[in-house]
Image 1 (cartoon, rainbow, N blue to C red):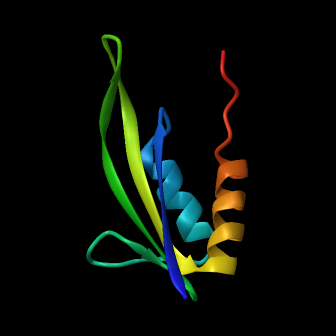
Image 2 (tube, rainbow, N blue to C red):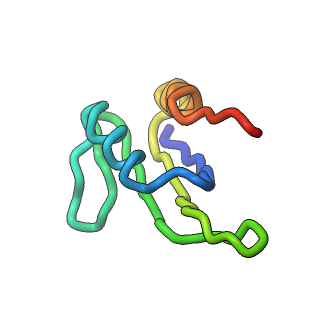
Length: 85
């Protein structure tokens, strides 16, 4: 059964996500989504505010079967983990 999970990532340039999804086998569609063998990811790019600072904000929606989705999101989170400071 196909499931969906959405994450909102802040402070990371959207091109980094685009490169990542291409590197794991995703093909860019005309609609701007990335499609792999058993998955699809949609990116919605924008900006958010942190006080008076504008930062990148990207909404990432994953669509895949449950087992694939869980593994894919876990690997994605590890790849884009950032230390606070």
